[in-house]
Structures are given as C-alpha cells and as structure tokens.
Length: 186
Image (tube, rainbow, N blue to C red; front, side, top):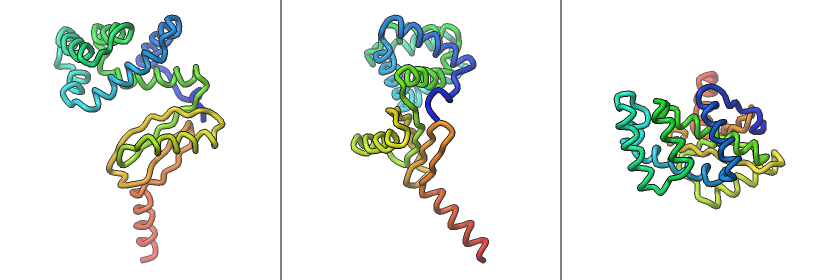
C-alpha cells in the first residue's frame, strides 16, 4: 500500500535512481523535485513542448536547444537542467514523465510518505487537496503525496489508487453500474 510497493525499474527507474542519489548527496531533493514537477507541468500545458519531448523526429541537438530555452524561461537550472540535458543527449527525453514519476516514488519512500494517484474530473482547489490528504493520512497513518490527474471523462467524483487499493467513486462508474443493473432487470 505504501510507496515501497511501487516499482522503480527499467530505464526510467535507473535514471530516477541516479538523480535521486545525486540529489540526496547534494542535499537538494526538495529543489530538484520542485523543478521536475514544474517541468512536468510545462509539458502538460504545452502541446508543442510535449511534441518536442516525445517525438523521435527531432534530433538531440534540436531537443537540447528547445529544452534549454524552456528551462531558462522557467528558471529551472542547476542539477535538474543538467539531468534533463543528459536525458536529451542520451535520446531518452521521451521517458521524462516516467523518470519524474519514479523520482517522486523514491522521494516519498525516503521521506516515509505514501503516494496516491488521484484522478478527478476537474482541478481541485487547495482546500479540497488538503482535505483529501488528511483523509488519506487518517487511513494510512502516513503523510500522503498526491499525483493528481485531471480526466473530464470521469464526469465527477474521483478515483484514488494507493498502492494496491483503489477506490472509484467516479460518476462515470456509478452511471455504468446503474446501466448494467437496468439491463439485467429488463
């Protein structure tokens, strides 16, 4: 259920582990986590940046130039910028989302936190996020880091996955249950 049951493996796991060990040695875990989360947010917000990150059509030099411009504008530098540069030079920038996810698992494990994946129909405000964290802490006894994903197709409610447990209180699931019950009754 806790973060230690989440897998950190494969190429993204190796890169994340290397970055985490460097961040721990530099005592810059929080700064690097914040920079990576900011970069992930930029990728989510910009379809052009998303294409640059994922598309094999761009050369490593083109990706590096675009990446450097984005990082400079976002104020992301130091170890994080160098690490993203290494991913780019090694033609692994396409895996950056998985690397960030694995890095966050390692940070949560290091801090004794659990990590929950939460899917919501629309973005949550700070009050709702705090209430969700408090509810999950009361269940787990640990601080819970949230990976929030917005998916309008769930219509309303939320889906929470914490380790091997999942609670689906989405409106889409409830409507599908009603639809199936009506088919069986009819």
